[in-house]
Length: 427
Ligand code: URA
Image (tube, rainbow, N blue to C red; front, side, top):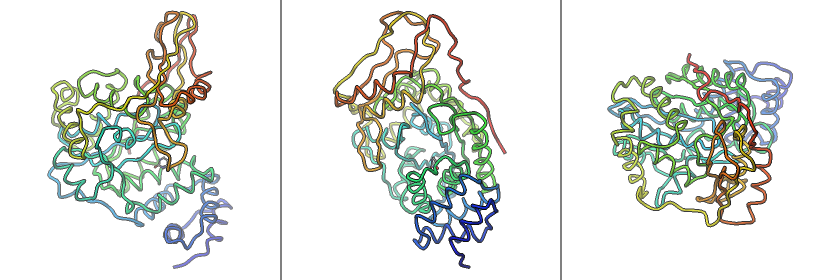
C-alpha cells in the first residue's frame, strides 16, 4: 500500500504514532529513491523532536533490516557472539576481545565501521597493520571464522542499505542524536549480521554520544528490547567514557596497546573491560569453556589474534606505522592529575590526523596521543603527561587548543570519575 510522504511527516510532526504499514512504506520508498532526501530529513527531525514508542522503533528496525540481506551462521558448529560499542576515545576493545572470545569457544562474526569525528573506527585501527584487508565477501568471512574463530570486517553494501542512506542523511541534518534513530540504526545492522547473542557497550561521558547515565540507560534499554524481540540474546553494559580508555589513542597506537593486552599485559582498565565483556559474551552465547583471564595468560587469545590477522592478509609481525613528529607535554607543577577529559583528548587525536572530518578523507595511522598519566595519579613537576604524535608539525597548534582545558594538575583533588562499569541492563 502506498502513502503520501507529507502525510507521514505531518503525523509525526503532530506527535502522532506511525502505523506499521506507514513505517514499512516510508523506509522502503526512501531506499528506492521514491521518498526524497528532504522529506526523510523532515521526518527524521520530527522523530528526533517527538520520539517513537517501542512498537514504532521495532517496526522501524525490522523495516530497515528487510531492505537488505540477513546473514546466517546457523551452519557453524559453535554459538556466535558479538559486541557493539557506541564509540569512545581509546576504545580499542574489539581488537583483543574478538580473538579472546574465539579462544574461549564462541565464534565472533563482527561487521564494523570506520571512524568519523573524534571517535575512532575499528577498521581504521586494523588497517594500520600492513596487508590487512577490511572488505571480505560472505564466503571469505566464513573462511576466516572457521580458520580463526573471529572475523572483523566491513559491512557490505547489502546489509541494511536503508540505514547506510539514512545515517549519511542524519549526519548532515542534525538528526544523529535521537535515541530511537540511534537504537534502530545500530540494531538493524547487528540483527542483520546474524549473531546469536550480542553484548552492547554503551559509553557514557564527554567522549561518548550519551553524555549522562540517564540517556545511556534509555538507549541501552531500547537496544536490549530490540535485540530480545528479534530473538538475539542481548545484554548491555553502561561504561565510563569521561576519560580515555587505556593509554594510547590513535590507529596504530591502539593496535600496539591491544597486542600488549593479548600478551598478558596492557593497562588495567582495558584488561578489566575486555575480560568483563568477554565473560558477558560467553554467558550470552551459553559457552562455558576456558575463562578469558586464563586465555590471556596462556597465549591462546594471542594465537587466535595472529590467525585472525593472517587470514585477512595482514602480517601480525610487521612493524606498525609511526608518526614522523612528536611533542611531549609536561606537568607545570606537582600535584594530582585531577582532570583528563575524553572529548578533549579525542579531538586532539583527531586533529593530529588519527580521525577524519569527511567520510572520504584518509587517516594517518601513526597519529594520536600517548598518555603517561591517568586521572587520580600523583604528578611531579616536569613529569611527562601526554605525547602528541603527527606526520605534520602544523597540526600541533590545533591539537594543543583542543587540550587547553582538557587536563589539569591541581595541588589536591578527587577526579570524581565514573566507575568503569556503571550498570548492566538485560531484558
Ligand atoms: N552508530 C550507528 O551505527 N548509528 C547511529 O545512529 C549512531 C551510531
